[in-house]
Structures are given as structure tokens and as C-alpha cells.
Image 1: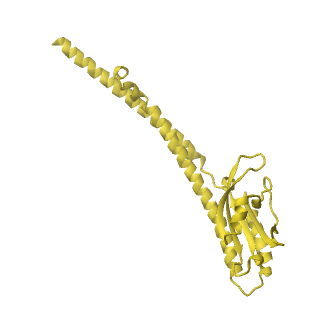
Image 2: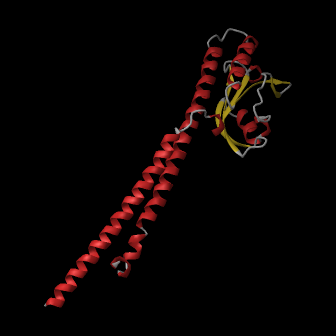
Image 3: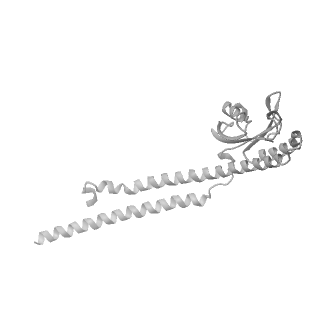
Length: 220
């Protein structure tokens, strides 16, 4: 075909492949962004749950701080029972943070206080956010998005409870529908075929045009 003889014709033949690669990269990035959005939504859910608990604890400043312990334990244990969600309630005992809520170990034990940066942060702020690297048994490395909050804030530091919650990509139960992924690849395949077919047709039309031009010159 004449398209092969043209200096830039060979590059034109690569256009469908380039398009296919760019399309694949786009869909890969779009899928990742959707997963990140779902993870962020999961994180916001545990943050809101922690803040609701804090509002309940802060509602009665006259109540002794010890009276909140049972309610805090029950609420935190409920959060910890959610799929792949970490939640722990701590209190200061002889100046040391001690876990007093029961944990649900879905994969392997996790102690957020093993991370120095988190330990430093919880004693500097009333609440905050940090990402820690976590490697569960028999799994790949995870980024755990951790939120912490002290309560009640109207009490002295040694009369407060520390709530630590965390989620990772494994916490997201909502998945992208399979038909969406299949549709993406089918769409890419059809587009690739149509683009290739159009280039071939253009090449044939170009070749036919050159032949007619040659025949005309011969007759003259």
C-alpha cells in the first residue's frame, strides 16, 4: 500500500496502537481514582462516627469523665467490628496509653502505638490524621488512614480517652461493577478495530487516486 511508501505513513499505522495504550492508561487512572474516592468515603464515615461519639461525650461537662468509659468502649468495639476497620479506645494508666476496648483481629494484630510518628502526634493534638504503613500477615503492604481524637476535651489530659480509628483499601466493600470494566475493554477493542480499518481505507483510496493520476499521465 502507498501508506508504507510515504515517510510518515508508517507512523500513521502506529496510531491505533498508540491510541490503545493511551486509552488503557486513562482507564487505569480512572479506576484508581474511583477506588481512592471510595476509600476516602470510608474514611469520612469513621471520622463522622468518632465525632458523633465525641459530641455525645462533650454534651454534659458536669458528668464525671469515668462515666463515659462504658459508652466509649461499646461504640468503639462496634466500629472495630466493621469489615477491615481498626478502632481502639485508650486511656492513660500511670502515664501510659492502655487499650481498654476489645479488638477484633480479622487478619493480624495491629497496634497503632507501634508507630513513633503517631505516638508523637496524639500527644501534640486533640485530633488529627496520619497515614501509616501496615503489613498484615500473608498480605501486601497497606496504607492505613488513621484518625484519632481525645475526649472529653473539657477534662484534663490524664482524664481523657483516646479513640484511634483507621481504614485501608481493604476496608472498602463497594467494588466497581464487572460490566463497567468489561465495557471499557470492549469499547477500546471496537475503537481500535474501527481506527485501523479507517487507516486502511484511507491508504487504499490514496493508492487508487495515485493509480488514476498515473493512468492519466500515460494517456497524455
